[in-house]
Image (cartoon, rainbow, N blue to C red):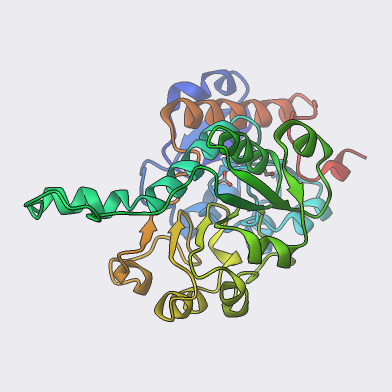
Length: 325
Ligand code: GLV
Ligand code: GLV
């Protein structure tokens, strides 16, 4: 029969039609509840491919339980949920979904920046609660975005695309990245600076760096303290880059003005998460790439990646190229 593929979440099924020609597909049927670990282990035991979500921990235990596994296709650009080293040792292809989600994620990131700066959620709640009794000169007054300095930490595809959005707002663009990005400098007028300079000079500090050993816990109290007291911090990468207790302390001590967060250390967060108590924190449920069009395109892409591996072809986006050597 056809190779078995397990999909760890209910995804738009029509987007996997092509893969159906190559595989028998089974899907966890819940959209918002992650697959139970024991179910995943059991399905993995007979799977040659798995389509995973960023909320699935794909570790050695899982791969050990999956002797036939050839490909792990992650429905995300980030892949810090996967033990890539072990996958590579075992010759399992790991793929992700960059490019297709770049514009959509940049839109959300810039929207989060705007919502935080102009206090949109607070203002919406104010109107809905019937508190709007009068017009006032400083009623819900926020901070300007145009002509301010944005500092982008992590100038990958998404970072550069956020920078492009920032040019439309006449922003001064700083960035920090492991490597210089001459195209971003030439095309967008972005200026490469040290991490410290970015932190000190930016009105908006926007993190889009992937989570790695280098970026884990990067935003600690000292870093927040180094920012302008008027600075707004935006995180749309991974919660693990921020020490949340330190962010909370920085907000308490008014070391920074506000934070817009699409991601958290331990997702999902509950209503009693301490950061939700702040009016100047805008929190989103990790929806960077969540447009219907993009999620469908990402689903088609992971389907293609799995099918590619089954026919012996290298998928378009492979995280561990060395498995093909
Ligand atoms: C979302 O966070 C992704 O990595 O695609
Ligand atoms: C990350 O790799 C990105 O696309 O920005």
